[in-house]
Image (cartoon, rainbow over all chains, first blue to last red; front, top):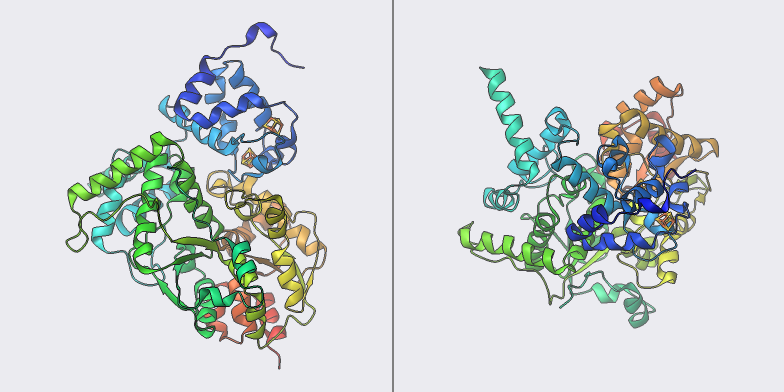
Length: 171
Length: 337
Ligand code: SF4
Ligand code: SF4
Protein backbone atom coordinates (compact mmCIF):
# COMPACT_ATOMS: atom_id res chain seq x y z
CA UNK A 1 0.00 0.00 0.00
CA UNK A 2 1.12 3.51 -0.81
CA UNK A 3 1.63 5.58 2.27
CA UNK A 4 1.10 8.74 0.22
CA UNK A 5 -2.10 10.62 -0.51
CA UNK A 6 -2.76 13.08 -3.31
CA UNK A 7 -2.06 15.92 -0.91
CA UNK A 8 1.55 14.79 -0.74
CA UNK A 9 2.55 15.92 -4.26
CA UNK A 10 5.42 18.33 -4.00
CA UNK A 11 7.60 19.34 -6.92
CA UNK A 12 10.43 21.18 -5.18
CA UNK A 13 12.85 18.29 -5.01
CA UNK A 14 12.01 17.19 -8.55
CA UNK A 15 12.61 20.72 -9.84
CA UNK A 16 15.99 20.88 -8.14
CA UNK A 17 17.05 17.62 -9.73
CA UNK A 18 15.85 18.81 -13.15
CA UNK A 19 17.69 22.10 -12.70
CA UNK A 20 20.83 20.11 -12.14
CA UNK A 21 20.35 17.53 -14.91
CA UNK A 22 17.69 18.43 -17.46
CA UNK A 23 17.15 14.82 -18.53
CA UNK A 24 15.67 14.05 -15.11
CA UNK A 25 12.46 15.77 -16.21
CA UNK A 26 11.52 12.60 -18.09
CA UNK A 27 10.86 10.66 -14.90
CA UNK A 28 7.54 12.44 -14.71
CA UNK A 29 6.35 10.08 -17.43
CA UNK A 30 6.90 7.05 -15.16
CA UNK A 31 3.74 4.93 -15.02
CA UNK A 32 4.92 2.88 -12.05
CA UNK A 33 4.74 -0.32 -14.06
CA UNK A 34 7.65 -1.84 -12.14
CA UNK A 35 9.34 -3.39 -15.19
CA UNK A 36 12.62 -1.76 -14.19
CA UNK A 37 12.44 -3.37 -10.76
CA UNK A 38 11.71 -6.84 -12.08
CA UNK A 39 14.82 -6.83 -14.24
CA UNK A 40 17.15 -4.95 -11.90
CA UNK A 41 20.19 -6.85 -10.53
CA UNK A 42 20.43 -4.50 -7.54
CA UNK A 43 16.81 -5.19 -6.57
CA UNK A 44 17.59 -8.90 -6.49
CA UNK A 45 20.22 -8.47 -3.80
CA UNK A 46 18.99 -5.45 -1.81
CA UNK A 47 15.96 -3.32 -0.97
CA UNK A 48 16.81 -0.99 -3.84
CA UNK A 49 13.61 -0.24 -5.75
CA UNK A 50 13.80 2.37 -8.46
CA UNK A 51 10.02 2.65 -8.87
CA UNK A 52 9.70 3.62 -5.21
CA UNK A 53 12.62 6.04 -5.49
CA UNK A 54 10.94 7.81 -8.41
CA UNK A 55 7.71 8.01 -6.42
CA UNK A 56 9.52 9.54 -3.47
CA UNK A 57 11.16 12.15 -5.70
CA UNK A 58 7.82 13.10 -7.23
CA UNK A 59 6.38 13.51 -3.73
CA UNK A 60 9.29 15.70 -2.70
CA UNK A 61 10.49 13.15 -0.17
CA UNK A 62 14.19 13.90 0.27
CA UNK A 63 14.80 10.95 2.54
CA UNK A 64 16.05 9.05 -0.53
CA UNK A 65 19.28 10.96 -0.18
CA UNK A 66 19.91 9.30 3.15
CA UNK A 67 18.87 5.86 1.95
CA UNK A 68 21.76 3.47 1.62
CA UNK A 69 19.74 1.90 -1.22
CA UNK A 70 20.79 4.44 -3.82
CA UNK A 71 24.36 3.17 -3.51
CA UNK A 72 23.32 -0.31 -4.65
CA UNK A 73 22.53 0.55 -8.28
CA UNK A 74 24.86 -1.32 -10.69
CA UNK A 75 24.52 1.38 -13.37
CA UNK A 76 23.98 -1.49 -15.77
CA UNK A 77 21.37 0.38 -17.86
CA UNK A 78 19.04 -2.60 -17.95
CA UNK A 79 16.13 -0.48 -16.69
CA UNK A 80 16.65 1.94 -19.56
CA UNK A 81 16.33 -0.95 -21.93
CA UNK A 82 13.12 -2.42 -20.48
CA UNK A 83 11.28 0.78 -19.53
CA UNK A 84 8.25 1.29 -21.79
CA UNK A 85 8.67 5.07 -21.60
CA UNK A 86 11.11 6.96 -23.78
CA UNK A 87 14.14 8.68 -22.32
CA UNK A 88 13.82 7.82 -18.65
CA UNK A 89 17.50 7.61 -17.75
CA UNK A 90 17.64 5.96 -14.34
CA UNK A 91 21.42 5.45 -14.06
CA UNK A 92 21.89 9.17 -14.65
CA UNK A 93 19.21 9.98 -12.08
CA UNK A 94 20.95 7.72 -9.56
CA UNK A 95 24.29 9.44 -10.19
CA UNK A 96 22.55 12.75 -9.64
CA UNK A 97 20.98 11.57 -6.37
CA UNK A 98 24.34 10.27 -5.18
CA UNK A 99 25.87 13.62 -5.98
CA UNK A 100 23.25 15.40 -3.88
CA UNK A 101 23.75 12.86 -1.14
CA UNK A 102 27.51 13.51 -1.18
CA UNK A 103 26.94 17.26 -0.98
CA UNK A 104 24.85 16.75 2.14
CA UNK A 105 27.55 14.54 3.62
CA UNK A 106 25.58 11.28 3.52
CA UNK A 107 27.65 9.42 0.90
CA UNK A 108 30.25 6.74 1.62
CA UNK A 109 33.61 7.89 2.86
CA UNK A 110 35.93 7.36 -0.07
CA UNK A 111 39.02 7.89 2.03
CA UNK A 112 38.24 4.61 3.70
CA UNK A 113 37.85 2.81 0.40
CA UNK A 114 41.48 2.00 -0.24
CA UNK A 115 40.76 0.58 -3.69
CA UNK A 116 39.36 3.95 -4.82
CA UNK A 117 42.15 5.92 -3.27
CA UNK A 118 44.65 3.73 -5.08
CA UNK A 119 42.82 3.95 -8.39
CA UNK A 120 42.43 7.73 -8.11
CA UNK A 121 46.08 8.07 -7.23
CA UNK A 122 47.18 6.02 -10.21
CA UNK A 123 44.89 7.92 -12.56
CA UNK A 124 46.29 11.27 -11.44
CA UNK A 125 49.91 10.08 -11.57
CA UNK A 126 49.92 7.64 -14.53
CA UNK A 127 46.62 8.19 -16.35
CA UNK A 128 45.52 4.59 -15.83
CA UNK A 129 43.83 2.69 -13.01
CA UNK A 130 46.30 -0.20 -12.94
CA UNK A 131 50.03 -0.43 -12.43
CA UNK A 132 52.23 -1.61 -15.29
CA UNK A 133 50.02 -0.68 -18.24
CA UNK A 134 50.42 -2.70 -21.40
CA UNK A 135 52.71 -0.58 -23.59
CA UNK A 136 54.25 2.80 -22.79
CA UNK A 137 53.27 4.93 -19.81
CA UNK A 138 51.40 8.19 -20.44
CA UNK A 139 53.85 11.12 -20.85
CA UNK A 140 54.01 13.53 -17.89
CA UNK A 141 52.58 16.45 -19.92
CA UNK A 142 49.42 14.46 -20.56
CA UNK A 143 49.19 13.49 -16.89
CA UNK A 144 49.44 17.21 -16.03
CA UNK A 145 46.53 17.84 -18.37
CA UNK A 146 44.42 15.23 -16.58
CA UNK A 147 45.19 16.95 -13.29
CA UNK A 148 44.16 20.28 -14.74
CA UNK A 149 40.89 18.77 -16.05
CA UNK A 150 40.15 17.26 -12.64
CA UNK A 151 40.64 20.52 -10.75
CA UNK A 152 38.17 20.85 -7.87
CA UNK A 153 36.79 17.37 -8.49
CA UNK A 154 36.18 14.90 -5.69
CA UNK A 155 38.85 12.64 -7.20
CA UNK A 156 41.44 15.21 -6.11
CA UNK A 157 40.23 15.30 -2.52
CA UNK A 158 40.29 11.52 -2.29
CA UNK A 159 43.82 11.68 -3.60
CA UNK A 160 44.88 14.45 -1.23
CA UNK A 161 43.29 12.71 1.73
CA UNK A 162 45.29 9.60 0.93
CA UNK A 163 48.50 11.64 0.76
CA UNK A 164 47.80 13.24 4.11
CA UNK A 165 47.07 9.87 5.63
CA UNK A 166 50.33 8.48 4.32
CA UNK A 167 52.33 11.43 5.59
CA UNK A 168 50.75 11.10 9.01
CA UNK A 169 51.62 7.43 9.06
CA UNK A 170 55.26 8.20 8.16
CA UNK A 171 55.51 10.69 10.99
CA UNK B 1 25.15 22.14 -33.52
CA UNK B 2 24.56 18.68 -32.11
CA UNK B 3 27.69 16.65 -31.48
CA UNK B 4 27.68 13.39 -33.38
CA UNK B 5 27.98 10.18 -31.41
CA UNK B 6 30.72 9.11 -33.88
CA UNK B 7 29.68 5.46 -34.10
CA UNK B 8 30.84 3.75 -37.28
CA UNK B 9 27.83 3.10 -39.54
CA UNK B 10 28.10 -0.65 -40.09
CA UNK B 11 24.95 -0.91 -42.21
CA UNK B 12 26.29 1.65 -44.63
CA UNK B 13 29.51 -0.33 -45.02
CA UNK B 14 27.55 -3.57 -45.52
CA UNK B 15 25.54 -1.90 -48.26
CA UNK B 16 28.53 -0.30 -49.97
CA UNK B 17 30.70 -3.44 -49.79
CA UNK B 18 28.25 -6.37 -49.67
CA UNK B 19 30.82 -8.90 -50.91
CA UNK B 20 33.87 -7.75 -49.07
CA UNK B 21 33.41 -5.18 -46.29
CA UNK B 22 37.13 -5.38 -45.48
CA UNK B 23 37.73 -3.17 -48.53
CA UNK B 24 36.30 -0.25 -46.56
CA UNK B 25 39.13 -0.52 -44.04
CA UNK B 26 41.95 -0.73 -46.58
CA UNK B 27 44.01 2.46 -46.56
CA UNK B 28 42.46 3.51 -43.24
CA UNK B 29 44.29 3.60 -39.94
CA UNK B 30 42.73 1.81 -36.99
CA UNK B 31 43.60 2.73 -33.43
CA UNK B 32 43.08 0.25 -30.58
CA UNK B 33 41.64 2.04 -27.54
CA UNK B 34 43.79 0.85 -24.65
CA UNK B 35 41.63 -0.60 -21.90
CA UNK B 36 43.32 -0.49 -18.48
CA UNK B 37 42.40 -4.11 -17.82
CA UNK B 38 44.38 -5.27 -20.84
CA UNK B 39 47.34 -5.04 -18.46
CA UNK B 40 45.94 -8.18 -16.82
CA UNK B 41 44.80 -9.78 -20.07
CA UNK B 42 47.33 -8.89 -22.80
CA UNK B 43 45.76 -11.49 -25.10
CA UNK B 44 42.78 -9.16 -25.45
CA UNK B 45 45.05 -6.61 -27.15
CA UNK B 46 47.35 -9.01 -29.02
CA UNK B 47 44.44 -11.06 -30.30
CA UNK B 48 42.96 -8.20 -32.30
CA UNK B 49 46.28 -6.56 -33.14
CA UNK B 50 47.75 -9.75 -34.62
CA UNK B 51 44.55 -10.41 -36.57
CA UNK B 52 44.47 -6.91 -38.08
CA UNK B 53 48.11 -7.16 -39.08
CA UNK B 54 47.44 -10.52 -40.72
CA UNK B 55 44.53 -8.95 -42.59
CA UNK B 56 46.80 -6.15 -43.82
CA UNK B 57 44.92 -3.45 -41.97
CA UNK B 58 47.04 -0.67 -40.54
CA UNK B 59 46.77 -0.71 -36.76
CA UNK B 60 48.19 1.65 -34.14
CA UNK B 61 47.83 2.40 -30.43
CA UNK B 62 47.94 5.95 -29.11
CA UNK B 63 50.64 6.62 -26.51
CA UNK B 64 48.85 9.85 -25.46
CA UNK B 65 45.59 8.12 -24.50
CA UNK B 66 44.56 7.92 -20.84
CA UNK B 67 42.07 5.66 -19.08
CA UNK B 68 38.48 6.42 -20.14
CA UNK B 69 37.76 7.53 -16.54
CA UNK B 70 34.37 5.80 -16.55
CA UNK B 71 35.05 4.27 -13.16
CA UNK B 72 35.54 7.73 -11.62
CA UNK B 73 32.49 9.21 -13.27
CA UNK B 74 30.37 6.32 -12.10
CA UNK B 75 31.47 6.88 -8.51
CA UNK B 76 30.75 10.62 -8.62
CA UNK B 77 34.43 11.52 -8.37
CA UNK B 78 34.40 13.73 -11.49
CA UNK B 79 31.63 15.82 -13.08
CA UNK B 80 29.97 15.27 -16.43
CA UNK B 81 32.02 18.00 -18.10
CA UNK B 82 35.28 16.75 -16.62
CA UNK B 83 34.41 13.28 -17.83
CA UNK B 84 33.58 14.60 -21.31
CA UNK B 85 36.80 16.65 -21.34
CA UNK B 86 38.88 13.55 -20.55
CA UNK B 87 37.10 11.77 -23.39
CA UNK B 88 37.52 14.60 -25.85
CA UNK B 89 41.21 14.88 -25.00
CA UNK B 90 41.63 11.21 -25.82
CA UNK B 91 39.59 11.47 -29.01
CA UNK B 92 41.61 14.50 -30.14
CA UNK B 93 44.82 12.54 -29.67
CA UNK B 94 43.51 9.57 -31.59
CA UNK B 95 42.13 11.78 -34.31
CA UNK B 96 45.72 12.87 -35.04
CA UNK B 97 46.70 9.29 -35.62
CA UNK B 98 43.80 7.30 -36.96
CA UNK B 99 40.48 7.14 -38.81
CA UNK B 100 38.71 4.57 -36.67
CA UNK B 101 38.98 3.65 -32.97
CA UNK B 102 38.32 0.06 -31.88
CA UNK B 103 37.16 -0.90 -28.37
CA UNK B 104 37.92 -4.22 -26.68
CA UNK B 105 36.05 -3.18 -23.51
CA UNK B 106 32.32 -2.53 -23.05
CA UNK B 107 33.15 -0.05 -20.30
CA UNK B 108 35.50 2.11 -22.39
CA UNK B 109 33.09 2.01 -25.35
CA UNK B 110 30.15 3.03 -23.18
CA UNK B 111 32.24 5.75 -21.53
CA UNK B 112 33.25 7.42 -24.76
CA UNK B 113 29.69 7.28 -26.13
CA UNK B 114 28.31 8.56 -22.84
CA UNK B 115 30.81 11.42 -22.85
CA UNK B 116 29.70 12.32 -26.38
CA UNK B 117 26.07 12.09 -25.26
CA UNK B 118 26.63 14.64 -22.52
CA UNK B 119 27.83 17.13 -25.11
CA UNK B 120 24.25 17.28 -26.39
CA UNK B 121 23.45 19.26 -23.25
CA UNK B 122 24.51 22.85 -24.09
CA UNK B 123 25.57 23.65 -20.56
CA UNK B 124 27.81 20.57 -20.29
CA UNK B 125 29.23 21.25 -23.73
CA UNK B 126 30.15 24.78 -22.76
CA UNK B 127 31.80 23.68 -19.53
CA UNK B 128 33.71 20.96 -21.39
CA UNK B 129 34.97 23.48 -23.93
CA UNK B 130 35.97 25.82 -21.08
CA UNK B 131 38.01 23.05 -19.49
CA UNK B 132 39.72 22.33 -22.81
CA UNK B 133 40.39 26.08 -23.18
CA UNK B 134 42.05 26.09 -19.76
CA UNK B 135 44.47 23.43 -21.05
CA UNK B 136 45.29 25.70 -23.99
CA UNK B 137 46.00 28.62 -21.68
CA UNK B 138 48.33 26.54 -19.59
CA UNK B 139 50.13 25.54 -22.77
CA UNK B 140 50.85 22.21 -21.21
CA UNK B 141 53.39 20.29 -23.26
CA UNK B 142 55.93 22.12 -25.41
CA UNK B 143 55.13 20.17 -28.54
CA UNK B 144 51.41 20.36 -28.07
CA UNK B 145 50.36 23.90 -27.34
CA UNK B 146 46.60 24.41 -27.30
CA UNK B 147 45.43 21.56 -29.38
CA UNK B 148 42.22 20.26 -27.85
CA UNK B 149 38.73 21.18 -29.02
CA UNK B 150 35.44 19.33 -28.96
CA UNK B 151 35.41 17.23 -32.12
CA UNK B 152 32.35 18.66 -33.83
CA UNK B 153 33.08 18.00 -37.47
CA UNK B 154 35.27 15.00 -37.53
CA UNK B 155 35.70 11.96 -39.71
CA UNK B 156 36.85 9.90 -36.72
CA UNK B 157 34.63 6.88 -36.07
CA UNK B 158 34.24 4.46 -33.15
CA UNK B 159 33.41 0.77 -33.18
CA UNK B 160 33.20 -2.05 -30.63
CA UNK B 161 35.47 -5.02 -31.40
CA UNK B 162 32.52 -7.42 -31.49
CA UNK B 163 30.67 -5.34 -34.10
CA UNK B 164 33.85 -4.88 -36.13
CA UNK B 165 34.80 -8.56 -36.02
CA UNK B 166 31.25 -9.58 -36.93
CA UNK B 167 31.31 -7.32 -39.95
CA UNK B 168 34.52 -9.01 -41.10
CA UNK B 169 33.44 -12.49 -40.04
CA UNK B 170 34.37 -14.20 -43.29
CA UNK B 171 37.90 -12.78 -43.11
CA UNK B 172 38.12 -13.81 -39.46
CA UNK B 173 37.01 -17.34 -40.33
CA UNK B 174 39.50 -17.58 -43.21
CA UNK B 175 42.34 -16.72 -40.86
CA UNK B 176 41.61 -19.56 -38.41
CA UNK B 177 43.70 -22.68 -38.07
CA UNK B 178 41.55 -24.52 -35.54
CA UNK B 179 37.89 -24.84 -34.64
CA UNK B 180 35.94 -25.28 -31.42
CA UNK B 181 35.45 -29.03 -31.98
CA UNK B 182 31.87 -28.95 -30.76
CA UNK B 183 32.68 -27.41 -27.37
CA UNK B 184 29.66 -26.00 -25.57
CA UNK B 185 29.93 -22.27 -25.04
CA UNK B 186 27.88 -19.98 -22.80
CA UNK B 187 28.06 -16.43 -24.14
CA UNK B 188 28.00 -13.32 -21.98
CA UNK B 189 27.54 -9.98 -23.75
CA UNK B 190 27.91 -7.76 -20.69
CA UNK B 191 25.45 -5.05 -19.61
CA UNK B 192 27.15 -2.18 -21.36
CA UNK B 193 26.98 -3.98 -24.66
CA UNK B 194 23.62 -5.68 -24.17
CA UNK B 195 21.75 -2.67 -22.84
CA UNK B 196 23.44 -0.03 -24.95
CA UNK B 197 21.21 2.05 -27.19
CA UNK B 198 23.53 4.97 -27.69
CA UNK B 199 25.03 3.46 -30.83
CA UNK B 200 21.81 2.16 -32.41
CA UNK B 201 19.43 3.83 -34.83
CA UNK B 202 16.92 1.07 -35.39
CA UNK B 203 15.31 -1.75 -33.47
CA UNK B 204 16.73 -4.21 -36.04
CA UNK B 205 20.30 -3.16 -35.41
CA UNK B 206 19.61 -3.34 -31.70
CA UNK B 207 18.32 -6.91 -31.86
CA UNK B 208 20.93 -8.10 -34.32
CA UNK B 209 23.69 -7.23 -31.87
CA UNK B 210 22.31 -9.60 -29.28
CA UNK B 211 23.06 -12.61 -31.47
CA UNK B 212 26.53 -11.82 -32.72
CA UNK B 213 28.47 -13.77 -30.09
CA UNK B 214 26.14 -16.78 -30.37
CA UNK B 215 26.64 -16.75 -34.12
CA UNK B 216 30.39 -16.55 -33.75
CA UNK B 217 30.35 -19.64 -31.55
CA UNK B 218 28.48 -21.61 -34.24
CA UNK B 219 30.73 -20.28 -37.00
CA UNK B 220 33.78 -21.34 -34.97
CA UNK B 221 32.43 -24.88 -34.77
CA UNK B 222 31.09 -24.75 -31.21
CA UNK B 223 27.61 -25.06 -29.73
CA UNK B 224 26.13 -21.96 -28.10
CA UNK B 225 24.19 -23.05 -25.01
CA UNK B 226 21.34 -21.12 -23.46
CA UNK B 227 21.42 -20.54 -19.73
CA UNK B 228 19.15 -18.88 -17.21
CA UNK B 229 21.50 -16.01 -16.31
CA UNK B 230 22.67 -15.28 -19.86
CA UNK B 231 21.62 -11.64 -19.73
CA UNK B 232 22.53 -10.95 -16.14
CA UNK B 233 25.37 -8.73 -14.96
CA UNK B 234 28.84 -10.20 -14.29
CA UNK B 235 28.67 -8.73 -10.79
CA UNK B 236 31.13 -5.88 -11.31
CA UNK B 237 28.21 -3.45 -11.22
CA UNK B 238 30.17 -0.20 -11.44
CA UNK B 239 32.41 -1.34 -8.59
CA UNK B 240 29.68 -2.91 -6.44
CA UNK B 241 32.13 -5.78 -6.15
CA UNK B 242 34.48 -3.44 -4.32
CA UNK B 243 31.80 -1.73 -2.24
CA UNK B 244 29.47 -4.64 -1.42
CA UNK B 245 31.48 -7.72 -2.34
CA UNK B 246 29.24 -10.35 -0.83
CA UNK B 247 26.08 -9.14 -2.57
CA UNK B 248 27.81 -8.47 -5.86
CA UNK B 249 29.58 -11.83 -5.86
CA UNK B 250 26.22 -13.51 -5.42
CA UNK B 251 25.33 -12.12 -8.85
CA UNK B 252 28.65 -13.43 -10.20
CA UNK B 253 28.11 -16.79 -8.55
CA UNK B 254 24.61 -17.17 -9.99
CA UNK B 255 25.91 -16.41 -13.45
CA UNK B 256 28.82 -18.86 -13.33
CA UNK B 257 26.70 -21.55 -11.70
CA UNK B 258 23.93 -21.20 -14.24
CA UNK B 259 26.46 -21.65 -17.08
CA UNK B 260 28.05 -24.67 -15.36
CA UNK B 261 24.66 -26.23 -14.74
CA UNK B 262 23.88 -26.43 -18.46
CA UNK B 263 27.23 -28.07 -19.08
CA UNK B 264 29.03 -25.18 -20.76
CA UNK B 265 32.74 -25.81 -21.34
CA UNK B 266 33.57 -22.12 -21.01
CA UNK B 267 32.04 -18.61 -20.99
CA UNK B 268 32.85 -16.29 -23.88
CA UNK B 269 32.62 -12.48 -23.59
CA UNK B 270 33.66 -9.29 -25.37
CA UNK B 271 34.80 -7.28 -22.31
CA UNK B 272 37.91 -7.47 -20.07
CA UNK B 273 36.04 -5.99 -17.08
CA UNK B 274 33.51 -8.84 -17.15
CA UNK B 275 36.42 -11.22 -17.73
CA UNK B 276 38.18 -9.88 -14.65
CA UNK B 277 35.10 -10.29 -12.47
CA UNK B 278 34.15 -13.70 -13.75
CA UNK B 279 37.67 -15.15 -13.63
CA UNK B 280 39.58 -13.61 -10.71
CA UNK B 281 40.83 -16.52 -8.54
CA UNK B 282 40.33 -14.52 -5.30
CA UNK B 283 36.68 -13.97 -6.22
CA UNK B 284 36.19 -17.66 -6.97
CA UNK B 285 37.63 -18.48 -3.55
CA UNK B 286 35.42 -15.95 -1.81
CA UNK B 287 32.37 -17.41 -3.57
CA UNK B 288 33.42 -20.83 -2.35
CA UNK B 289 33.69 -19.51 1.18
CA UNK B 290 30.40 -17.62 1.11
CA UNK B 291 28.19 -19.79 -1.08
CA UNK B 292 29.74 -23.21 -0.53
CA UNK B 293 30.62 -24.26 -4.05
CA UNK B 294 33.90 -24.00 -5.95
CA UNK B 295 33.14 -23.08 -9.55
CA UNK B 296 35.91 -23.65 -12.05
CA UNK B 297 34.26 -22.89 -15.39
CA UNK B 298 36.87 -21.14 -17.60
CA UNK B 299 36.27 -17.69 -19.10
CA UNK B 300 37.67 -16.32 -22.38
CA UNK B 301 37.51 -12.94 -24.15
CA UNK B 302 36.51 -13.04 -27.82
CA UNK B 303 39.87 -11.56 -28.89
CA UNK B 304 41.73 -14.23 -26.91
CA UNK B 305 39.60 -16.97 -28.44
CA UNK B 306 40.32 -15.74 -31.94
CA UNK B 307 44.02 -15.74 -31.09
CA UNK B 308 43.78 -19.36 -29.86
CA UNK B 309 41.85 -20.41 -32.97
CA UNK B 310 44.45 -18.71 -35.15
CA UNK B 311 47.14 -20.82 -33.51
CA UNK B 312 48.91 -18.16 -31.52
CA UNK B 313 51.30 -19.21 -28.76
CA UNK B 314 49.57 -19.99 -25.52
CA UNK B 315 51.45 -17.29 -23.61
CA UNK B 316 50.40 -14.63 -26.06
CA UNK B 317 46.69 -15.52 -26.07
CA UNK B 318 46.02 -16.38 -22.44
CA UNK B 319 47.73 -14.78 -19.52
CA UNK B 320 49.84 -17.23 -17.62
CA UNK B 321 48.61 -16.03 -14.26
CA UNK B 322 45.06 -16.97 -15.21
CA UNK B 323 45.91 -20.51 -16.20
CA UNK B 324 43.70 -23.04 -14.51
CA UNK B 325 43.56 -26.76 -15.29
CA UNK B 326 40.24 -26.42 -17.10
CA UNK B 327 41.37 -23.47 -19.20
CA UNK B 328 44.49 -25.39 -20.13
CA UNK B 329 42.30 -28.33 -21.10
CA UNK B 330 40.15 -26.14 -23.38
CA UNK B 331 43.31 -24.76 -25.00
CA UNK B 332 44.59 -28.28 -25.63
CA UNK B 333 41.28 -29.51 -27.08
CA UNK B 334 41.06 -26.59 -29.50
CA UNK B 335 44.67 -26.71 -30.62
CA UNK B 336 44.93 -30.47 -31.08
CA UNK B 337 45.97 -31.10 -34.70
S1 SF4 C 1 20.99 0.65 -13.87
FE1 SF4 C 1 20.59 0.47 -11.66
S2 SF4 C 1 18.36 0.68 -11.50
FE2 SF4 C 1 18.80 0.23 -13.63
S3 SF4 C 1 18.59 -2.01 -13.79
FE3 SF4 C 1 20.76 -1.55 -13.45
S4 SF4 C 1 21.03 -1.71 -11.22
FE4 SF4 C 1 18.80 -1.53 -11.61
S1 SF4 D 1 9.99 0.71 -16.16
FE1 SF4 D 1 9.93 2.93 -16.56
S2 SF4 D 1 7.75 3.48 -16.44
FE2 SF4 D 1 7.97 1.44 -15.48
S3 SF4 D 1 8.25 1.88 -13.26
FE3 SF4 D 1 10.30 1.74 -14.18
S4 SF4 D 1 10.85 3.86 -14.74
FE4 SF4 D 1 8.62 3.83 -14.38
